[in-house]
Length: 116
Image (cartoon, rainbow, N blue to C red; front, side):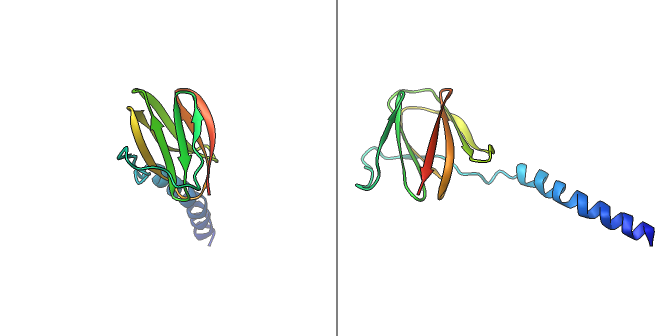
């Protein structure tokens, strides 16, 4: 009886750890899409001009506009989890995120971004 109880306790404690490790190794994060420059934001979207780039949000994601090349971009969830990281050149890009609050880090400067 004690062996079964011990085995059950081990399973209960190790199962969440296993799920957490498998979720971190899952590469199903959002992919960044380059958007045609003729695409303009909706009238309801307010464009935020930051240091060397601008962005606007929708309820489905974040649009980034870079006039210069070589931009180091990282997108974090509010919990600190890295959602996307990469180097973007000049142009307009879209990151599908869904609704929520995110931390956008561009060239070592952080911005709070809200997708409503």
